[in-house]
Image (tube, rainbow, N blue to C red):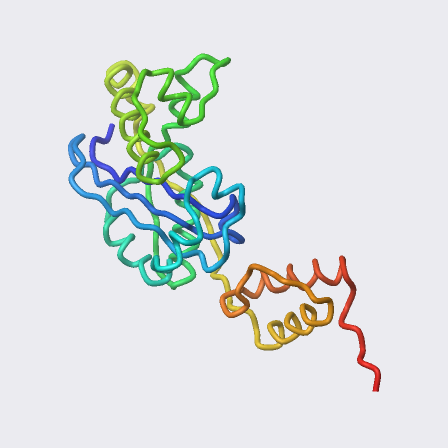
Length: 240
């Protein structure tokens, strides 16, 4: 069992690290069971948030406009984590977003982790939902504001401590760290030709989009071009 780790939680614009962006990071350094440090920040995703994300998290575009972009702080995040294992509820999700950000900046990031979701699936009754909120309710853990990164990181930390206290001696194997095997490819920026063609498509079909073309990746640009052509058609030739 480990009693020193980084309790990690992220808020994001969506579920897929190859397409979506980080909006908030909370990393709590826990040493011998006690929180000894915090790295908490909003992150500018360089795109407007959907109504669903605003409703779920309470984070707004106005809150993010002056926040740092992930490219400027990913090094600090990795330095804060250091060699400690990660801890979180469905921790692979959060790790995958940080991993993608690290790979994009040509940085190495490999971690071991304990996933409280996996532990709950082993210990809680089958009929009980295993999400973080319900798991904390089941084990009578008071929760701070949900769906914000620091609150959920704290909840995962308290949940882990409670589970260790209840089951650590009988089932210590549930609390052993395991490698997070997650491969990510570096996202290449969109080419000049892609950006120009996208601009022509948007102008031709009079489309407004929320994505900033200066920051779009090559794969995202390709997907967006295909989507526009499928829905509206190609650039119409101008009459001479």
